[in-house]
Length: 360
Image (tube, rainbow, N blue to C red; front, side, top):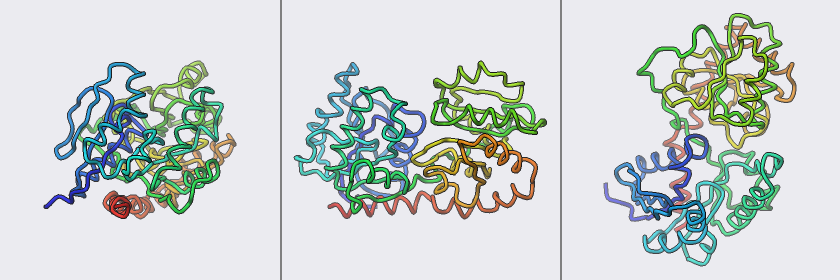
């Protein structure tokens, strides 16, 4: 197939450095574009050279320390972009290089969420200032903005007054986590309900554990697995009564087996810009009980049951009902396929390709 001739550059910091969340999004987008489109894709990274899939061009600044890498990403990268004949530059996580608006290069910005605005107490004053300053500039100079949910779009308009006309809502695709069923062994003995979540305050895990411990469930465990964080030691200090198991920093293989053998999943987060764990649960044909806040109803649709994440009794009741009613579980599981169709990656790539080509 003849190449389209379009050269698109991407900020690859998250692609290489983040194992979850923003990293998963970056790798999903690049891989799917590489499969479904014939443009020239360029990844720009401040660090050392790394292997890339065939068809993707890598540009590695090989900066040795944090300060030089940060400066290169914010300003120095423009020289490398200019040398590479880039026509469109896509900032994959809330920022664009300072001064790119003077370059003549068209720009796309992905804004995943506005958590630093909604939950400022979770960030230091310096971090908040940096994030807000970078996003304030980027949302003004970007020619097009992508948000993964209506929630993130509305927050961007609310907090920064961003022009609605240049925001497109394009969800994250269902192929972001493809089941690996080569190892069929269960990592947990007995039946369990799974929560995949980082151990941070916003994920609302303390309320989840309290709800589970006061439930009438005796023959099933709650397993919480994800990136370690400040809540992990707090949960370890709680009396979990042998009913809750914590697994920090699981491998992708272990995570896949946890999903595969779970009865269903639970996601109690107070706020999300999207909600990848719900989509991951669907990929393993598992329904979920989910927080009714932020973007999560957009992802879960009618294939999950909802609860109020600030009400421990509401969480408890939703979990108990899903566990005790096989009929309810089957009802929600029957809706998964149609809900997943909304996040089919090929269809979403058409939206991205249309967005890129309209800029030129």
